[in-house]
Image 1 (cartoon, rainbow, N blue to C red):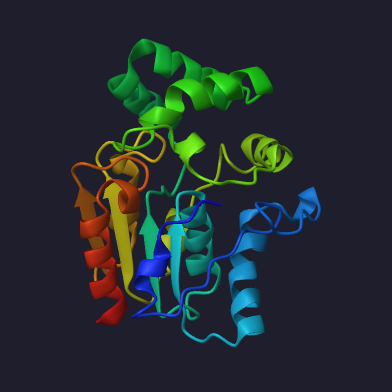
Image 2 (cartoon, rainbow, N blue to C red):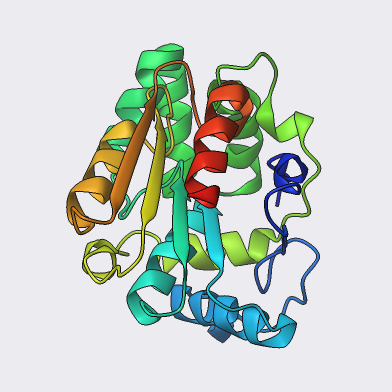
Length: 236
């Protein structure tokens, strides 16, 4: 997974970052464990191992899927939750519309091919053409970050849980403050997805912040604003 610069928060919080089971530098385990229920329960297991109580859990992008399922399965566990650049369900039409708006018909076609069949050739084209569209910061996101990928896990996720996962009922179970962060130019987790997340959280718990100049990763494109909001949320 890529780092979000969370070291900037170390003066107000103990920061623990980890790679999900099967991904990054964590043990690969077996495909039967590559699912949201397991990953959500792993948050609790990690906290138990480290003796962390009432954690503030931040899930960015795919991590946001895990954090939402964690909210649903363990609503009494977190002190607070942050859902950044993520969605509660996969909306391919919205994703393709965003890629076309940002990169034209070529980007839309390449994204459609990749998400329907993420083979090596489609993956190469997607990373090359669609990668630079992920953020509003110049450069290709996938070339600018250090990432250890498990393409077998991605293929498993893409053909099993990804097309049909729906976390809206999990959101409704939230019992703690939840901060939702969304970028107006996010192609893969469009802002309509952030709006849907906010709408399904209990009104008394949700804080929704939109970023007019951000794509996929508000901590990258509008870092000063994003960290200011996060620091206030963590410390109040």
